[in-house]
Image (cartoon, rainbow, N blue to C red; front, side, top):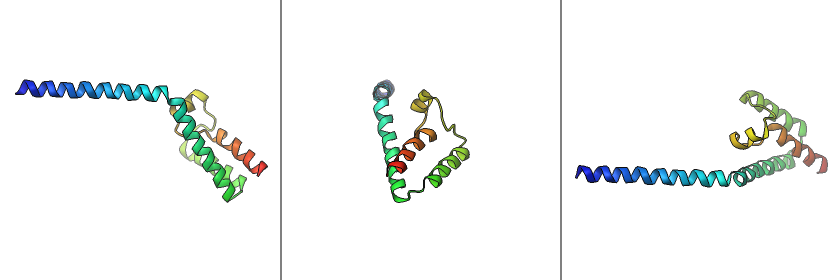
Length: 104
């Protein structure tokens, strides 16, 4: 009985390890799509905010204040932003916001 429990436990951890490895490979293969999708939503939210309240100086000041508060780098290296950040950098978010206000 104890041997059967050990075998079941070993199978569980083996299957869990395989599943975890497959999920990590899926995430690695689709990282560019996931990041692009997330960043696209951030840019859309920024556009929407500027359409509601077209106050670019307040928008910029808010992002600068948040960057200082969070101690974040306003313009990190591209690969650092891609692999380690959940949101686009402040500099990359302000560029499209400025274009939105100018065009709209």
